[in-house]
Length: 311
Image (cartoon, rainbow, N blue to C red; front, side, top):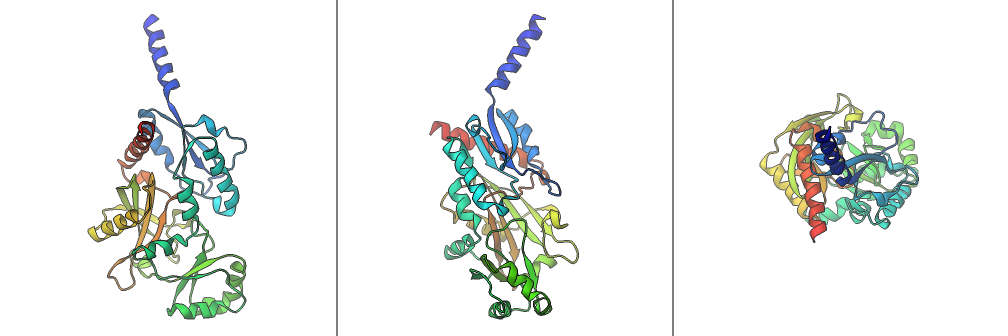
C-alpha cells in the first residue's frame, strides 16, 4: 500500500507539473476532418496537457494556459472581427499565441500573396478588385486573357465563396457572382489546369523545417481539393524543385512561424511551381498522413517554448 501511495503521489505530481496548452477549434466540427488530437500524446510526453477550446466560447480564462495554438478554427472567416478580438484577449492575458497575432492579421487577407510576389515568389497571376458592380464580371474575365478563371474572396477559408468561371458560367450566373462580391474584395486568377491533372501540393513546416508533403486532388467534376469537398489526400515525396519553392516561401517571411503550410500547383506552362497559398493561421497540417509528423510538431512546439523561457 505504501508503494502504491508513493507511486500515486509521483503520478499526481507529474500531472500537476504539466504545462497547459489550448488548441483553438470550432464549436461545431461536423463535416470537417480534424486530426489535431494525434499530437496530444507526443505533447503530453513532453510535459503538455492539451485542451481543444472553441475560439468563440465565452469567458475562457486564457491566463490559465501557458500557450494557445490556433488550429481548427475553420469558421472564423464568418466573424473575422470577433476572432481577432479573441486573439487580442489571449495576448492581453499574457498567454503566448501561436502563430502570433501579427502574422494572423497579415495572413487574413489574401493580399499577402501580392506582398510575397513583390519579394520574388512565383504566384498564380492575379487581378485584385475591391468589389464588383453589375456588369463588371465579363470585363474582369476579359482582363485575365484566359478561357477559364477562378474568383474568390480576399478573406476566406476552405474555398468558401469561390467560383470557377468560363464563358457559359458568366452568361448564366453573372448576376449571382456580382452580387456575391458587391460589398467585399476579391481576386481573380486563371484556372490552373494542373489542379485537375495533377493536384495541389501542400508542404507542412514546423519551426521553419519541412516535415511532410501531401498531394490533394479534387473529386470528379469539382476543382476544390479540400477533404470537406470530397478531395483525396495522399502522402508524397516532394521533388527537389518543389522543396526549393517551399523553402523560398518560408524565407520570404519576416519571422519563423511555429507552423506553416505552403500550397503549390504546377504552372500552366509546366515550367515552375506557383504558390497558391501560404497558410499561417489555421491550416490543416495532415498530421495523420505521416507517422512522424505528430511528434515533430510536438518537439517544435516544446522547443519553441523552451527557447522563450530561456531567452
